Figure 1: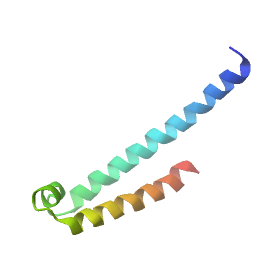
Figure 2 (figure 1 turned 120 degrees about the horizontal axis):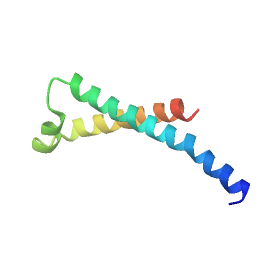
Figure 3 (figure 1 turned 30 degrees about the horizontal axis):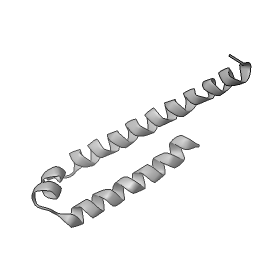
Figure 4 (figure 1 turned 120 degrees about the vertical axis):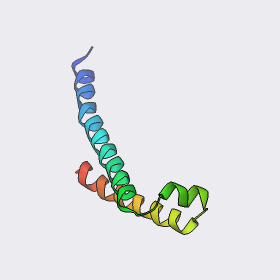
Length: 74
């Protein structure tokens, strides 16, 4: 393989590390939000069709993803 291809393959490794780190932190934040709430988020959204809670949770997850994108990506 040419040297340039090998160098480009080595550049993929930090991207994969940041991806796994960001995904892990995002999953951890979802678990923390589920643990902090005094009710079952899944039951409220799926069972009771609580649209307001779904919008709030979706907004919070988007905000967390934006923050993690800046922290992990920089």
